[in-house]
Amino acid sequence: MYQFNFQPVFENLDLLLYGALLTVRLSLAAMVLGLAVSVMGAVGKTSGIRPLRWLIDVYVEVIRNTPFLVQIFFIFFGLPAIGISMSPNTAALVALVINVGAYGTEIIRAGIESIPRGQIEAGRALGLTPVQIFRYVVVKPALRNIYPSLTSQFIYLMLTSSVVSVISANDLASAGADLNARTFASFEIYLVLTVMYFLLALGFSTLFATIRRVFFTYPASR
Amino acid sequence: MKLTRRLFTTLAASALAAGLALPATAADLAAIEKAGTIKIGMLVDFPPFGIQDASGNPDGYDADVAKALARYLGVAPQIVPVTGPNRIPYLLSGQVDVLVASLGITEERARKVDFSKPYAGISIAVYGDSGLEVSDASGLAGQSIAVARASTQDSGVTAIAPDGTDIRRFDDDATAVQALMSGQVKLIGVSNVVMSQIGKATGDRFNKKFDLSSQVQGIAVAPGSDALLEKVNAFVDQATTDGTLDKIHEKWLGEPLPDFVKQAQ
Image 1: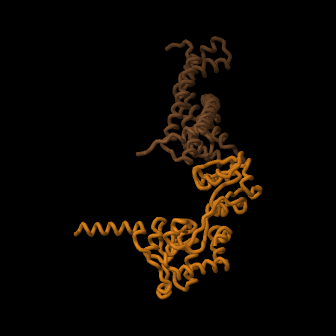
Image 2: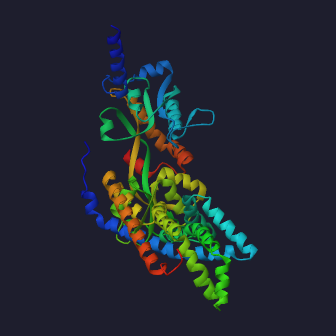
Image 3: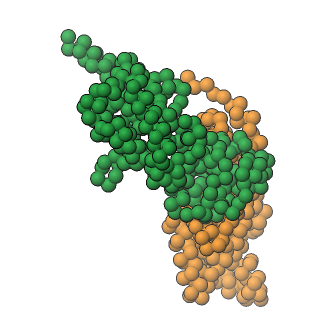
């Protein structure tokens, strides 16, 4: 019978918590920057400028049809050949932003296209400036429409970030692997890791629900 | 009756597999010389020490040493492919006369077989950019060094690294090597075997900084084969002094026989 021994895990909890902190920071930064990339991508894609649309199409298709592992290897090991060298944590962030940006572009594009033309015309009729129309009449309602799929993509991003340990970034999965290599308490370590990732995902869900309550529950027809 | 025979076969087979239950069969030098061939066991799945060439014949560092040994004894080599787990049973059951099978000399194995003086070695060392001045552990401070996670080199580097060393752990040697080659790290902890492969691709871009640990390998004979062992030792001595081992090491690992092997002799 296997003797469970959580001693090594609790003795090195600071290591795991530090890894979790990096996972949170990495994920939050990738979400914010990824959202910016997604909005720009979606706007570009729904604009009338053809070369721009093609460019974004290529970006979205390449990223969505290649494995994340290959993307992150390319950024970390491939780019130095042309003089672009990043630290593991920076490379991880860049890879995550590029990756989530491609998925986010498609999600937000769908949101923008769900806005009826009449709504934009109504904005014009009210005398709103183009920037105001874009902010309040297009993007905000669009984000509200696709909010659930966007946030689940963000949760998925946080879970995907566990892959960055392959380029020696110091995230939670990497801290777990290091600890496992030293203590061989695989069951205990990965059980605790599972719980920690679950709690992190739960935390992000709560955060997203709060954001939704604050920003996206203005009166609207149901 | 049938059952008993099957039981006997099973017992014999497991005894063979364990290689312990059988009494060791000592190799007789006179018999080898009379037969004109020596049966040499070697690995064929351990590059660059034991491999198979394009036509399926055993090749590699061990094969070259085995052929040189046979030439020294004045007999023809008959190379028998063995595997890691069965190489000692092969020797003890007399199916091979000697093992030139990258057998690391350990106390535990020395209780079962007789080892010659070391003829090869695997070392783990810190390598890095040739321009970088690092000669001992203290030089690691402020540097980034790649290792394969949970490997011997990982524990070696972790044990000696001073504060401020940026140890980057990758999943395997191949990824750690990638990190070195792409310039993501300046140093790497890796074995001389892997490093010789890198050397082939990069020339003198990287060099050795200092050793972490090493293990030497010996030619093994069954206990009691004293006359043969004496000859094998004489061969290792001669091959070391006349440069034969240097040449073979140069051919397969890109540098002459390392000093730590010579010192262990």
